[in-house]
Length: 234
Image 1 (spheres, one colour):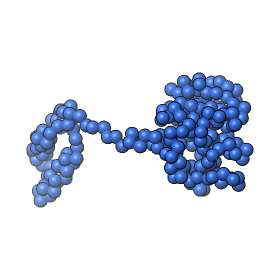
Image 2 (image 1 turned 135 degrees about the vertical axis):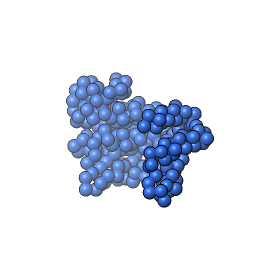
Image 3 (image 1 turned 60 degrees about the horizontal axis):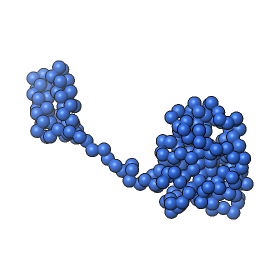
């Protein structure tokens, strides 16, 4: 499903941000990143350097001379803007933006982002179906281009794969309570010899706290052996 999604950077000024953006795309399984009139010559060594393991995305990046051509393959286009524009266009809150993504998840979706200093022009925005804004601190609304990209990638990824982040890794080879009790009893006996439980009237409470600590832990056999060795040495 991520193959249906693409990102377009309009007149990006810093090659480093292009590389960071490509890296953000790959973090969440997206592959399509195109440029409209980048300021620096393309391909660019600085962009490749910051892309790290996402060089394959930059190798497929296409350069366009205008926004109109760059979005031809998409059915629905969302434009990012840091401020509300005085144009006849649907402005979405971020929650509305995500709801719209879910609604259009089976279509080819494009996202366009403007240059770092000025953002998209009204002429560029005219090609989008919707305008959305990433909610940030109103006292400091400037957000880096690549940061905006990775936020959108993350949120769109969640829309496409809602159950992915809910999966819990199962712990394997967890010891049973009997083995855990043997360890705790061993620790207790050694602490008793060292006169740890002082004053004596607090011993019961201290033991309860000690067992609460180990009661929350799910140890593997390997971890049990390590802890047993550690306490034995101590």
